[in-house]
Image (cartoon, rainbow, N blue to C red; front, side, top):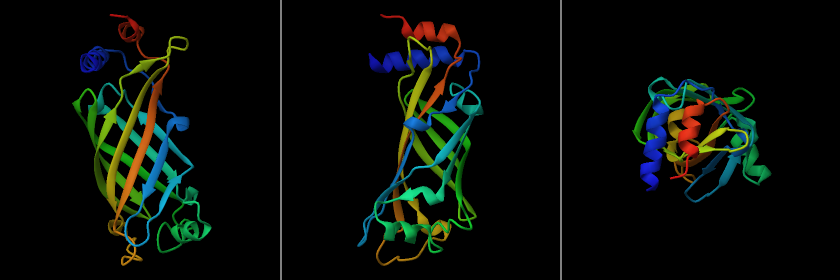
Amino acid sequence: MLAASVFLAFSVAQAALAADWQIDPSQTHFHFKTRGLIQTEGSFSRFSGAIKGDVFDPAHLELTFMIQADSASTGSSMTDGMLKGSSFFNVEKYPEMTFKTTQITQVDPAHSMVQGELTMVGITKPLAFKVNLSTPWVDPNTHTMTIKISTSFLLNRNQWGMSSYGSFVNKNIEVQVDSAMVSSNVDPTVIAKLTVKP
């Protein structure tokens, strides 16, 4: 039943008028985890995102995320200082990391494949991963539509020249991203279809 409702929501919305979408910072989280002799978990606290196009038309949709590298936090001032230094993020020279999509392909109503380019420490490399999509939800009072997205993938830090401490830290970094896309001007006919009780 859930799968059918998700499919209906996306099918109806495909024909809708284009809406303006934004990334909701309050529902966005970037986490990372290292493996090896040294295991570290952390997150980024300052970032922004932009959406160009309609999320219901993934073939013409562009997403961009900008992360402030010096907002990396692990709970250890020593580790934070190391991450922000020249061996890793080199935040004084490269204060921002950017990911921009180049292609988004909808696999099914609940999943999409995302391809894009990640720029860190002045190096741009391709990056691809699968994204989970929630059922579109409409606030009955504000009529704002929200679609939550989440993904997890491994990032090979060596490809961006961050090869220091290879004997202690695995080259593959675990990345988890949770976010939400919101719009306050989705076509009313789409909202009506989503809010009608069976």
